[in-house]
Length: 429
Image 1: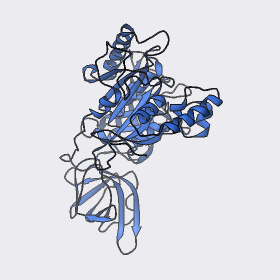
Image 2: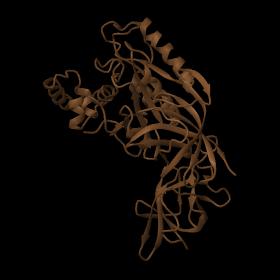
Image 3: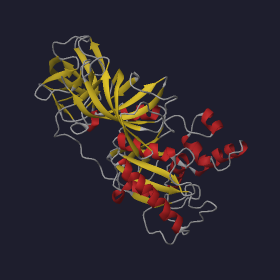
Image 4: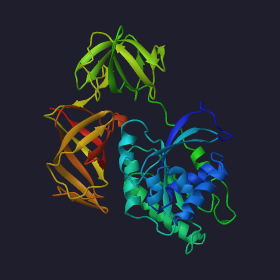
């Protein structure tokens, strides 16, 4: 079933739901989908029945997002569930963020820079450790617009209290400032996803609240401008050798415009070639803009000269990269480190389409629970830190001040995402 606003030609945005594991992310998405007509009521009823049989009454909404059997049994979100969602203004892809895990990698490696995030904070609990991590994470991942859903206003002990709502808003505002968001530009909503208050329908239960519903706030998100006037940056996902055509790199334009007939430089491979033709959705085009997934044929390069993880740009402003004897300084947020880590730790960095083992060369400044420490000996889960990094082989990356789109990275180790970060400064030799 589609919603009344369904129209794929509308401007498209990615929206991610973040927040502590029990603060109602999945239930919020389920409620939003149901009340806005994206899901039939009988689907929820079936899920609710299933939930009750497992002794999880009230989890029916969450099951809408948690399609996996294992998740249903455990009552938590694992996979990144992609759901389409329409409002009067936009066509959204909803990314439901599991606590952490691969969500970070998926967000960073291009498939979904989130344009906006909904942070769910339960009114009874307020801010806790995971709320903090997720807020820092949203900032590191370059989320521009944040909506805070102060959820569970109906819960016993909160009882729709304006006083409690204001306390939570203040608590969250302090956290946002710490993470680098401007609280005056953040929309706060007093809601209950389980009861359906102010998610899609305005509630009668909080006459003191005159703000928007969550649906209205999502529909009011500002479309980010397409960075067409910036220099070209196109991370390469794959390189194909196609008989009769030649070498065809494939990737998504992040910034600038790819033109047919121009010469591009691939770094760190340090190869350049003329763009003979560009193809998008099996159609030959003469140009491609940010967000476009393209294949393009390059003259005079073999398929082994360039590789996944290279970035293409024009020769007058070639993509930056760090050689194996150079360093860069990055700001990271640790999410899930089994034990303490220190200088010498060498996990795999995922930046745009590149995967490179990178060594923690020097810990510069740690922020832990709001306290700063210069040159700490080690880091643990929850810490943020400024670190000097040394890649083990050449790696294309940009500084956050010039190309934020290509400055972000996820750090993975032992099959999971352990941190997210952003490159602040490249130290060229």
